[in-house]
Amino acid sequence: MTDLSHTEHQIHYVSNFQDLVSRPFSGEMNAICWTRELTGDFSEIVKKLTLSGNITAIEQAELHQLQLSEQGVLAREILLNDLELLTAHGASPILNVIRHYDRDDTYPFFPTDVYSFHADHSPIPTDTFLCTYYGEPSEILPNSQGKKKVLVPEIRDELRKLYQGADEGFESFLSDHFFDLHYQAKPDARPISLGLGHLWRLAVDHPGSRVPPCIHRAPKEKPGQNRLLMIC
Image (tube, rainbow, N blue to C red):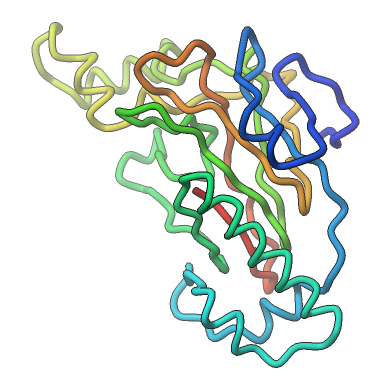
Protein backbone atom coordinates (compact mmCIF):
# COMPACT_ATOMS: atom_id res chain seq x y z
CA MET A 1 0.00 0.00 0.00
CA THR A 2 1.23 3.48 -0.77
CA ASP A 3 0.78 6.79 0.98
CA LEU A 4 -0.30 10.14 -0.44
CA SER A 5 3.24 10.97 -1.60
CA HIS A 6 2.92 8.26 -4.23
CA THR A 7 2.28 9.99 -7.56
CA GLU A 8 -0.31 8.57 -9.93
CA HIS A 9 -1.43 10.13 -13.20
CA GLN A 10 -5.01 9.70 -12.09
CA ILE A 11 -4.73 11.81 -8.91
CA HIS A 12 -4.62 15.60 -8.75
CA TYR A 13 -3.89 17.34 -5.44
CA VAL A 14 -5.34 20.72 -4.44
CA SER A 15 -5.11 22.94 -1.36
CA ASN A 16 -8.66 24.31 -1.05
CA PHE A 17 -12.30 23.38 -1.51
CA GLN A 18 -12.93 25.61 -4.52
CA ASP A 19 -10.20 23.91 -6.53
CA LEU A 20 -11.51 20.52 -5.40
CA VAL A 21 -14.95 21.11 -6.90
CA SER A 22 -14.02 23.24 -9.94
CA ARG A 23 -11.14 21.29 -11.45
CA PRO A 24 -12.49 19.16 -14.34
CA PHE A 25 -11.51 15.54 -14.66
CA SER A 26 -9.53 14.86 -17.83
CA GLY A 27 -7.46 12.16 -19.48
CA GLU A 28 -6.46 9.57 -16.89
CA MET A 29 -7.13 11.95 -13.99
CA ASN A 30 -10.29 10.80 -12.18
CA ALA A 31 -9.53 11.55 -8.52
CA ILE A 32 -8.92 14.92 -6.87
CA CYS A 33 -7.70 15.28 -3.30
CA TRP A 34 -7.86 18.31 -1.03
CA THR A 35 -4.93 17.43 1.21
CA ARG A 36 -5.39 18.51 4.82
CA GLU A 37 -3.82 18.00 8.23
CA LEU A 38 -6.83 18.28 10.50
CA THR A 39 -6.72 19.32 14.16
CA GLY A 40 -9.08 18.08 16.83
CA ASP A 41 -10.07 14.82 18.47
CA PHE A 42 -12.45 12.95 16.18
CA SER A 43 -12.25 9.80 18.30
CA GLU A 44 -13.95 11.70 21.15
CA ILE A 45 -16.89 12.46 18.89
CA VAL A 46 -17.17 8.82 17.81
CA LYS A 47 -17.11 7.62 21.42
CA LYS A 48 -19.76 10.09 22.61
CA LEU A 49 -22.30 9.57 19.84
CA THR A 50 -25.22 7.23 20.39
CA LEU A 51 -25.01 4.49 17.79
CA SER A 52 -27.80 2.35 16.37
CA GLY A 53 -26.94 -0.60 14.19
CA ASN A 54 -23.84 -1.14 12.11
CA ILE A 55 -24.12 2.22 10.31
CA THR A 56 -25.40 5.31 12.13
CA ALA A 57 -26.15 8.54 10.27
CA ILE A 58 -25.26 11.55 12.42
CA GLU A 59 -27.37 14.70 12.26
CA GLN A 60 -25.93 18.16 12.85
CA ALA A 61 -28.23 18.62 15.85
CA GLU A 62 -26.58 15.60 17.50
CA LEU A 63 -23.14 17.09 16.95
CA HIS A 64 -24.21 20.38 18.53
CA GLN A 65 -25.55 18.59 21.62
CA LEU A 66 -22.31 16.78 22.45
CA GLN A 67 -20.37 17.93 25.50
CA LEU A 68 -16.81 17.98 24.21
CA SER A 69 -13.29 18.87 25.25
CA GLU A 70 -11.43 21.67 23.48
CA GLN A 71 -10.00 19.20 20.97
CA GLY A 72 -13.42 17.65 20.45
CA VAL A 73 -14.88 21.08 19.73
CA LEU A 74 -12.22 21.67 17.06
CA ALA A 75 -13.12 18.38 15.41
CA ARG A 76 -16.83 19.20 15.51
CA GLU A 77 -16.22 22.58 13.85
CA ILE A 78 -14.40 20.85 10.99
CA LEU A 79 -17.24 18.37 10.49
CA LEU A 80 -19.87 21.11 10.49
CA ASN A 81 -17.83 23.22 8.08
CA ASP A 82 -17.38 20.30 5.66
CA LEU A 83 -21.11 19.60 5.79
CA GLU A 84 -21.79 23.26 5.04
CA LEU A 85 -19.30 23.43 2.15
CA LEU A 86 -20.64 20.31 0.45
CA THR A 87 -24.28 21.28 0.95
CA ALA A 88 -23.65 24.75 -0.48
CA HIS A 89 -22.02 23.07 -3.49
CA GLY A 90 -25.28 21.19 -4.10
CA ALA A 91 -24.24 17.83 -2.68
CA SER A 92 -26.10 15.85 -0.01
CA PRO A 93 -23.39 14.84 2.47
CA ILE A 94 -24.03 12.15 5.05
CA LEU A 95 -21.89 11.73 8.16
CA ASN A 96 -21.75 8.10 9.24
CA VAL A 97 -20.24 6.16 12.10
CA ILE A 98 -19.57 2.70 10.71
CA ARG A 99 -19.04 -0.46 12.72
CA HIS A 100 -19.07 -2.47 9.50
CA TYR A 101 -20.99 -2.71 6.25
CA ASP A 102 -23.24 -5.63 5.37
CA ARG A 103 -21.50 -8.40 3.49
CA ASP A 104 -22.97 -9.70 0.24
CA ASP A 105 -23.02 -13.49 0.05
CA THR A 106 -25.79 -13.83 -2.54
CA TYR A 107 -23.24 -15.07 -5.07
CA PRO A 108 -20.23 -16.47 -3.13
CA PHE A 109 -17.95 -16.28 -6.18
CA PHE A 110 -18.86 -12.63 -6.79
CA PRO A 111 -19.58 -10.40 -3.76
CA THR A 112 -20.96 -6.98 -4.72
CA ASP A 113 -20.57 -5.22 -1.37
CA VAL A 114 -18.44 -2.10 -0.85
CA TYR A 115 -15.44 -4.12 0.34
CA SER A 116 -15.00 -5.16 -3.29
CA PHE A 117 -13.17 -2.79 -5.62
CA HIS A 118 -15.95 -1.05 -7.52
CA ALA A 119 -16.96 2.09 -9.39
CA ASP A 120 -19.98 4.20 -8.50
CA HIS A 121 -22.67 4.59 -11.16
CA SER A 122 -25.27 7.29 -11.69
CA PRO A 123 -27.83 7.95 -14.46
CA ILE A 124 -27.00 11.67 -14.21
CA PRO A 125 -23.68 13.56 -14.06
CA THR A 126 -22.34 13.60 -10.51
CA ASP A 127 -19.21 12.94 -8.43
CA THR A 128 -18.53 11.02 -5.23
CA PHE A 129 -17.09 12.99 -2.30
CA LEU A 130 -15.69 11.26 0.75
CA CYS A 131 -13.49 11.88 3.76
CA THR A 132 -12.47 9.52 6.57
CA TYR A 133 -11.91 11.41 9.82
CA TYR A 134 -11.31 8.46 12.12
CA GLY A 135 -10.70 4.74 11.64
CA GLU A 136 -9.45 2.88 8.61
CA PRO A 137 -9.49 4.96 5.39
CA SER A 138 -10.87 3.90 2.03
CA GLU A 139 -8.63 2.85 -0.87
CA ILE A 140 -8.56 3.50 -4.58
CA LEU A 141 -7.10 1.27 -7.25
CA PRO A 142 -5.34 2.79 -10.27
CA ASN A 143 -7.43 1.89 -13.30
CA SER A 144 -4.40 0.36 -15.01
CA GLN A 145 -4.06 -2.06 -12.08
CA GLY A 146 -7.58 -3.45 -12.17
CA LYS A 147 -9.71 -5.48 -14.56
CA LYS A 148 -13.48 -5.70 -14.72
CA LYS A 149 -14.46 -8.96 -13.09
CA VAL A 150 -17.01 -9.66 -15.82
CA LEU A 151 -14.07 -9.84 -18.28
CA VAL A 152 -12.14 -12.45 -16.25
CA PRO A 153 -12.83 -15.70 -18.18
CA GLU A 154 -13.46 -17.99 -15.21
CA ILE A 155 -15.72 -15.44 -13.51
CA ARG A 156 -17.57 -14.76 -16.75
CA ASP A 157 -18.18 -18.50 -17.16
CA GLU A 158 -19.70 -18.66 -13.68
CA LEU A 159 -21.91 -15.67 -14.45
CA ARG A 160 -23.15 -17.33 -17.64
CA LYS A 161 -24.09 -20.43 -15.63
CA LEU A 162 -25.96 -18.18 -13.22
CA TYR A 163 -27.72 -16.30 -16.03
CA GLN A 164 -29.05 -19.27 -18.07
CA GLY A 165 -30.73 -16.98 -20.61
CA ALA A 166 -30.41 -15.89 -24.21
CA ASP A 167 -27.02 -14.49 -25.26
CA GLU A 168 -28.47 -11.11 -26.25
CA GLY A 169 -29.64 -10.46 -22.69
CA PHE A 170 -26.40 -11.34 -20.91
CA GLU A 171 -24.88 -7.85 -20.83
CA SER A 172 -28.13 -6.40 -19.47
CA PHE A 173 -28.10 -9.09 -16.79
CA LEU A 174 -24.59 -8.04 -15.76
CA SER A 175 -25.52 -4.37 -15.46
CA ASP A 176 -28.89 -5.03 -13.80
CA HIS A 177 -27.08 -6.85 -10.97
CA PHE A 178 -24.17 -4.35 -10.87
CA PHE A 179 -21.65 -7.06 -11.73
CA ASP A 180 -20.12 -4.78 -14.37
CA LEU A 181 -19.12 -2.19 -11.72
CA HIS A 182 -16.73 -4.48 -9.85
CA TYR A 183 -13.04 -4.96 -10.46
CA GLN A 184 -10.32 -7.47 -9.68
CA ALA A 185 -6.92 -6.12 -8.69
CA LYS A 186 -4.04 -7.40 -10.80
CA PRO A 187 -1.34 -9.43 -9.00
CA ASP A 188 1.08 -6.48 -8.87
CA ALA A 189 -1.57 -3.91 -7.92
CA ARG A 190 -0.75 -1.19 -5.38
CA PRO A 191 -3.95 0.21 -3.85
CA ILE A 192 -3.66 3.78 -2.62
CA SER A 193 -4.87 4.68 0.85
CA LEU A 194 -7.01 7.83 0.88
CA GLY A 195 -5.63 8.69 4.31
CA LEU A 196 -7.28 10.53 7.19
CA GLY A 197 -8.71 14.04 6.93
CA HIS A 198 -8.28 14.47 3.19
CA LEU A 199 -11.43 15.33 1.23
CA TRP A 200 -11.65 13.43 -2.04
CA ARG A 201 -13.69 13.83 -5.20
CA LEU A 202 -13.95 10.68 -7.31
CA ALA A 203 -15.21 10.28 -10.86
CA VAL A 204 -18.45 8.32 -11.28
CA ASP A 205 -19.60 6.14 -14.17
CA HIS A 206 -22.37 8.20 -15.77
CA PRO A 207 -23.58 9.09 -19.29
CA GLY A 208 -21.30 11.68 -20.80
CA SER A 209 -18.36 11.11 -18.48
CA ARG A 210 -15.09 11.83 -20.25
CA VAL A 211 -12.88 9.82 -17.89
CA PRO A 212 -12.92 6.27 -16.51
CA PRO A 213 -14.70 5.99 -13.16
CA CYS A 214 -12.48 5.88 -10.07
CA ILE A 215 -12.18 2.37 -8.64
CA HIS A 216 -12.35 2.26 -4.85
CA ARG A 217 -13.36 0.14 -1.87
CA ALA A 218 -14.16 0.36 1.80
CA PRO A 219 -11.46 -0.96 4.14
CA LYS A 220 -11.81 -3.86 6.51
CA GLU A 221 -12.44 -2.22 9.86
CA LYS A 222 -10.21 -2.87 12.83
CA PRO A 223 -12.01 -4.79 15.59
CA GLY A 224 -13.43 -2.38 18.15
CA GLN A 225 -12.59 0.73 16.10
CA ASN A 226 -15.50 2.45 14.36
CA ARG A 227 -15.01 4.67 11.31
CA LEU A 228 -16.17 8.26 11.00
CA LEU A 229 -16.88 8.93 7.32
CA MET A 230 -18.50 11.71 5.35
CA ILE A 231 -19.75 10.67 1.92
CA CYS A 232 -22.02 11.95 -0.82
